[in-house]
Length: 197
Image (cartoon, rainbow, N blue to C red; front, side, top):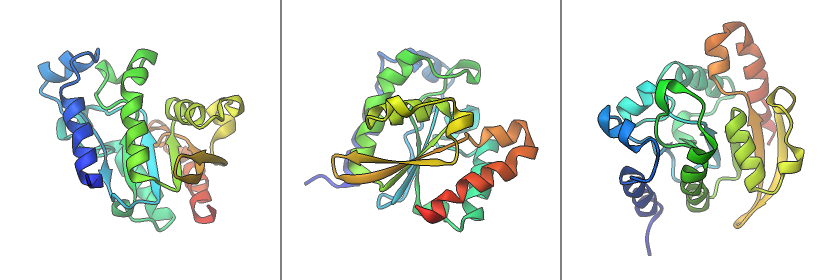
C-alpha cells in the first residue's frame, strides 16, 4: 500500500508537469519551483495559504519569506512547533507580480489540496486569508456561513471530512502583519484559538 509520502510525491510530480495550468510557462521561464507543502505527515493541524510568493517559488518551500517569519512567530506564540504542522497553499505555483489567484487557477489546483487533506487527514484546517477561507468553507459545505474575512477571522467551525469530524479555523493571512506591523497582536490573539480547539 502506498505511504503518505508516496501519495504526496505523486501530487508533486503531477503539479510539476501541469502544462494545462495558466501558471506553468511563467514557472518554467523563471526557473521557479511549484510549492507543494511541507511539514509533518502526521500533523493534526494543516495551514492553507493562498499561493506562493517569489521566495517560495525560488525555493519550493511554503511560507519561507517575510510572511513566513510572521507565521513562525504566531506559531511560537501558541507554543506550536512548525515541524509538527503541515503548511501548504491552494495554488501551488506563483501568480505573476504576486497578484491574487484567479478563480480558474484555484479550480485547477484545488483538487491537489483536496487530495493532500485526504492523505494527511488533519483534525484542524487553518485557512490563511480570504481565498483559502472561501475555498475550504465551500469544500466542507459551509459556504452559506462565509462573510468577509474581517468578520470571520479568529472563528472556528465544525465540519465533517470523509475521515471524521474536523474544525476549520479562519485566520488572516500573515502578510497582513507584514503590510501593517501594528496588527500583529490581533493575529496573535486569533492564533490563540488553536490552544482551545
